[in-house]
Length: 392
Ligand code: ADP
Image 1 (tube, protein in one colour):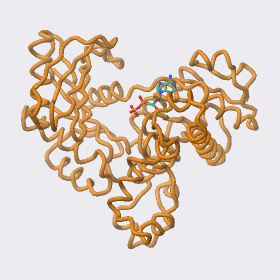
Image 2 (cartoon, helix red, strand yellow; image 1 turned 90 degrees about the vertical axis):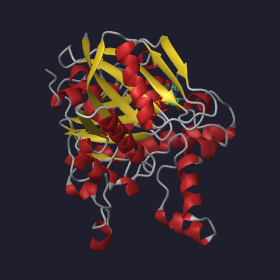
Image 3 (cartoon, helix red, strand yellow; image 1 turned 180 degrees about the horizontal axis):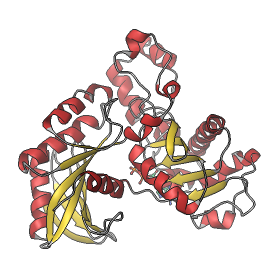
């Protein structure tokens, strides 16, 4: 029997999971991962081995809908019956927003979930579903220790000036704050950096996936980050706009766009998709000769360069630059264009290493070490969970 931590990333109609053995010290081994998808119609389950080979699948049938509890009961049942050696002894949930209260992972109680639910209005895309997943698991398996791991926690070390906006107190008192996201990924990266760049104190990491952000870290702690309040702003993303000035939003509202319509446009139809008019997928765009696709990639690199430049100033210099997540780990052209723009820092790219996706992609004499470090948010959540739950 292998005791396992179940890592859960609950969305509105899908639920991703990974099962990690509680053995293995700081590196708990992945046993399997999978997801339940399309819960609102034609739900299906798939499980894969750690190296990505499908091991099982299940369909509830077209026209069916299932809720988070049914999906989680199925996953735990499947793990304990089909993977006969697994016993789920704890769960770790990705929860995007921990508010001002949580600057670290926390053991989940009903009161903690009530607090987190109270933050849903600030973050419309994930928070409500993350909380729903945790509640559903608590209902299905009362007594199972559960931990919430937050995307915002890692950034609570930012200085006060980096966490506020220049708004009157009455508006700031509503809870508006520069939260910062992708903190689970940056936490993981900050722990990896010493292995790649020993002694690096001033580090900038760029998490470039479907969502994208940049984080400035000093001695492994976040001091500034680009994704601000609810996952929309900072860098342009697959379908999210990135930074658009507030006065543009006011103008568009006066021009007849409702707040709901604008929110949908800015979250779902903007960014790389909006600029290219074709796709939010970087792989597709960087291989395209279409002028709008080329412009979308140029805008992405331009915005990334601008943030990195600003963060070099925040840090007072730069020892190491890290690229991570889907684009960061795989797009040699995006990394090359960004590094070329940052050449003024004395940063020199090793083009062969960059084409091979690293891990070190700067030349030995580069004044800044540049690295490709794969992120692993799921493993980070498993580690956070094991840090708080000590199974017998
Ligand atoms: P998510 O945030 O959804 O988890 P990922 O971290 O998987 O997303 O990143 C998805 C992005 O990575 C997509 O834009 C995809 O095109 C890009 N990507 C993946 N592989 C490559 C590649 N070989 N070259 C360029 N971009 C890539």
